Amino acid sequence: MAANLFYFLIFPGLLFAGITGAFLSWFDRKITARVQFRKGPPLLQPFYDFFKLLLVKETILPKKGSPVLFLLAPVFSVFGATMAGVFILLPLFNIASGFRGDLIVIFYLLTIPSFSYIMGALASGNPLAAVGGSREMKLILSYELTFLLVIAGIIMKAGQQFDLYSIIGTQQQGGAFIGSISGILLFIAALFCIQAKLALVPFDMPEAEAEITEGIYIEYSGAAYAMIKLAKHIMLFILPAFLAALLLGGFRTEGINILWSILKIVGTVLLLTLLRNTNPRIKIRQAMSFFLIWMNLIAIAAIVLIVFGY
Amino acid sequence: MGFKSYCFKKSLWVFHFGGASCNNCDIEILDCLTPRHDLERFGILLVGSIRHADVLLVNGSINLHDRERLLEIYRQAPKPLLVVAIGACGCTGGLFTESITFAGPVDKIIPVDAYIPGCPPKPEAIIAGIVKLVNKN
Ligand code: SF4
Image 1 (cartoon, rainbow over the protein chains, first blue to last red):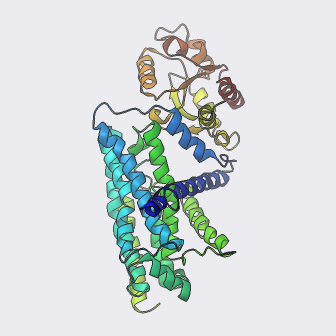
Image 2: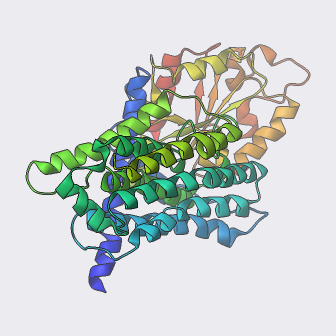
């Protein structure tokens, strides 16, 4: 019990994932600034933002709509993100071996933040938030199938193993999955899914700040918004970590290998950031056809290649 | 200086309210966020929703229609909120003072924490004004 609480609250759960995610979000902002020939924010900027929202600002409840659900949604999102983080990071750091089928559990836990954002947006009673919520729903519908196909491909590649620990183990003995044609295809599809899950440009239509002014987060202020920020930071860390576990061969924590592990995460975030800085926002219809046709095609092609052993 | 006010100073999110301005002040405000001046290095961000704002930048003359909107925006903002009046129009009314639709400079409608005069103020002046405002509290 105590060990589980420690896993959840401190390492590798809430505290560790939150702090790492905050640094990654600073990295994201800094790279964005450098791409635009700016100087960018200081290293501790995400922490200033978080504590300002949490401690200083007032939280305003919506007059129309449901205040309880409005306040619960951020808590759910942090909970879902942390839970998924614990299940991903425990096998990744070689602490515990997880259980059979934890891949499916992680898959469902990773959708909880998006669903709770939708819940919070619809509970706020703001029309722009409702627009954002409906867009987020469509986005989930489009990328989720691709994500499932990617996971199916990886399960087949690992020889019908359903748990993260043995998938990482298979890769550490036989080389990372990305070193094959099907692996590269799966990596591309998974990268775009992560981009959409994090709602980064070109898939940021739920929060499109220039168009529906932050959309699903429009009514959030103060501590509730701080919780959302925390959930976003955690997701920014655990999704690249999940990708590293599935395709890049997981982490090693002894000696010089630790640098290589950090590089995997930072490199993935760098790719996501460059993608977001070199693309405009697309329409929701375009995003849906992008995932439902092209990305699914890539994922299915990868699965066919796996069947033939490439 | 406490931890709370330190965090607040380091992360000011700005909401831009453009009254009936001639649009020059708006351009100068956006200039502050461009690569040359880059306010993000002080943690200043432009936000789209008043619920996220810490600073309300008001520029342009406030006419009878804007007055209600400005009050509404001010009431919707989570406190603590700093209000900055930008440009001659925001501070005193500038060349619109004698217009029949003019509803008074910003400080007659909501409390103002800092005034940045100029027509339009240079981006450097806006940055200097915000720095002074931050050092005041
Ligand atoms: S202060 Fe001058 S530049 Fe600014 S809105 Fe008024 S007239 Fe335009």
